[in-house]
Image (cartoon, rainbow, N blue to C red; front, top):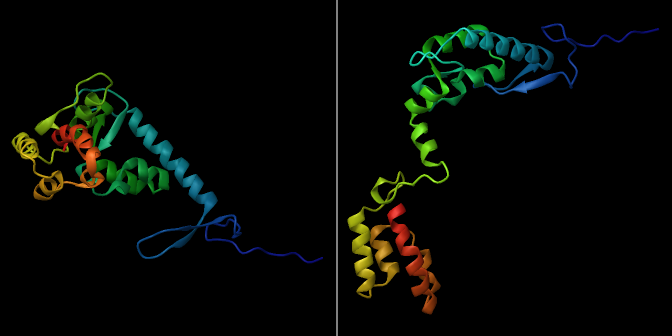
Length: 191
């Protein structure tokens, strides 16, 4: 009777194809044991939950909290939630938490500016119009000028080229062009 010895990883788990995961890294992908990765994720999640249970918002004192840091917008993988989901070491997670500010969801959204957007998107609330809209491309004066030039008989395609806006609606031609322009022209205030 012969026994087959399976190769093992550094952690001691068997090195089967089902148990190995290639993890991307800046210096190249490396093999990682799926069982150890699962345990690391669980350990990181429990650690962060314990910290969150004892931490309050520095602004209002509420819970649960989020970890705020300005650099998270440019580097979303530095977020505590992302690090926990990847199964980073507790040492690295603690280092990131030390750089962050604990804020409740409301204070975090207010600080990031997401609260104003959330309130504006509530059904029934008035949306900002004209120059107050967040994606404005033309001022109210420019829109008035565009409307006057169109009334004076200038082609919308030429006007659109002057203001560097999309002229797609002008390519319909004929009688339909006039109908489309009366519908689309008022939307200049949204850009």
